[in-house]
Amino acid sequence: MTKPSTIRIGICGLGTVGQGVWKHLERSRADLQSRLGVTIELHRGAVRDLSKRRTVDIPVEKLTTDALAVATDPSLHIICELIGGTGLAREVTLAALKAGKVVVSANKALLCDHGAEIFATARKHGGHFLFEASVAGGIPIIKAVREGLVANRFKLIYGILNGTCNYILTRMVQEGASYPTILADAKRLGYAEADEALDVDGWDTAHKASILAFLAHGVWVKTDQMIVEGISKITQADLKHAATLGYGIKLLAVITRDFEANQVFVRIHPTLLPKDRVLANVNGVFNGIAVTGDVVGTTTYIGRGAGQDATASAVISDIADAVALLTTGKAPMLPEEAASIHDRGRNPSIAPLDKIRSRYYLRMTVKDEPGVLAQVATVMANHAISIASVIQTSSERSDAASLILTTHESDERAMGQTLADLQKLSSILEAPLLLRIGDFEE
Ligand SMILES: NC(=O)c1ccc[n+]([C@@H]2O[C@H](COP(=O)([O-])OP(=O)(O)OC[C@H]3O[C@@H](n4cnc5c(N)ncnc54)[C@H](OP(=O)(O)O)[C@@H]3O)[C@@H](O)[C@H]2O)c1
Image (cartoon, rainbow, N blue to C red; front, side, top):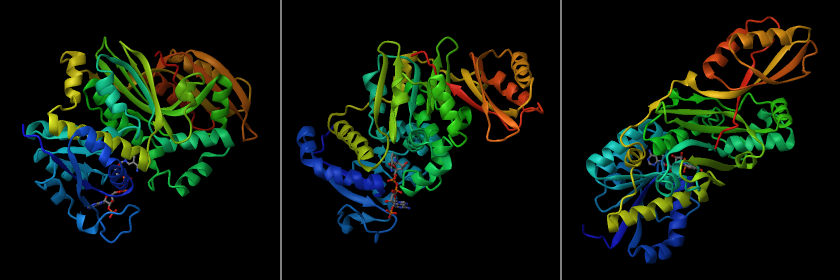
C-alpha cells in the first residue's frame, strides 16, 4: 500500500464533542504528527448552521452544511461522525464507509440500532469503523475489551454507563433530596438531556450495553431483548433501606454469559450493589465498569463518562488508530473476529428474559393490620421464592406500613408472577417496587 504522507480529516458535527476534538487535536497535533510520522490536517467540517458562534476558532471557509459532501470528499481519509442521532449520521457513516474511509464515531444510538449494517458495509467496501467514544466517554473500555483482554472470555461485565443517573442517585444519597428535585437541577446544569427519558429511563445505558455485549460476545442485542428499567421510581426510603441492608443503589448495565447454555443476558436496571464493591463507590458524573475475564479475573475502569474533553480524548485515540491503520495497514481487530477467537465460531444466542436470575428487593405499601406479612409470604412461597430478610416501617400514609423484603435467588419469571399475584391482594395498597440485588460472582 502507498503510505500517505498527509492524513486529512473531516469532522461532521462541530457541537460539544466536535469542537472538543477540533480544539484538542489542534493542541496536540505536533506531538501526534511526530509520534505517527505523518502530517495531520483538519481539512473540513460540517455543521447545520454556519452562522452559529462556536467556542473554538474554526475558519469559516473550512465549513459546509453538506455533511454528505464531507463524507464522500475523495481528498479525506478519516471522517468523524459527531452529529448524533440515527438519520443523517447513518447516511454519513455508510457513505464514508462505501468510499473506503475510516469512520470515527461517538454515536452509541447509531451503533446499537444499525451496528450490523455498519460493520457489513465496512467489510464489503474496505472501510473501517472505530467507536471508542461511544461507551463510557473518556474510559478506553472498547480498547481494553477488544485488545488488552483479548485472551479472555467474559462471564460478567457490569457498569455504571450513564453519568446523569449516577449524578442524580449520588446527590439523592448525599443531600437527602427527592428524585424530581435533583432531576430538575441536573437539567438546569445541562447534565441531563432535554429528553430526559434517554438518560433516566435507561435507554442510553442500554445502547452502550449493546455495544459492549457485541464486543465481548459477537452478537447484537437489541433493546427489546434486554430488561431496561430506569431510576425514576427510586425514593429516599429505598436508598435508606438499601444502606441499612449494606448496599448502595446504582443504575447498572449487566452483561452475563452462560457458557454451558451458550447464552448472553443483557439487563439495565437500578441495582442494589454491596457497599464494598468498587463501583458502589463511583459517584457523581463518573462512570465505572468491572470486566471479569476467565484468564485475568476482574479488572475495573473508572473515569469521566461524558463531556467535551473526556469524549474528545476517546475520539482522538481512535483518530490515532485510524492514522496507524492508514499508514501501516494495521487494522484494530473487528468485534466479529474477536468473538470468533473466543468462541471458535460458536456465537451465543440471546437468553429469554424470564430466565435471568437474581436476588430481589421488594418494597410494598401495605395495610397496617395483622396478617399481611403472612399473606405476602404465602404468595411468594407459591412461586418458590424464599424470603431472605424483612423490614417493616411506618409509611407516609397513616393507614399503611412499608414492607421491604429481600429474597434469595430466583428468576424473572417467578418474580413477575409473584408481583402479579401480590397486586391482587387487597392488603397491598400500591404497585410494589422491584429492584435487583447485584451480589455478582466476579
Ligand atoms: N456530549 C457528550 O458528552 C457526548 C459523550 C459521548 C458521546 N456523545 C455522542 O457524540 C455525538 C455528538 O454529540 P454532541 O453532544 O456533540 O451533539 P451536539 O452538541 O448537538 O452537536 C451536533 C452537531 O451536529 C451538527 N448537525 C446537526 N444536524 C446537522 C445537519 N443536518 N448537517 C450538518 N451538521 C449537523 C450540529 O450543527 P450546529 O452546531 O450548526 O447546530 C452540531 O455541530 C452524539 O452521537 C452523542 O451521543 C456525546
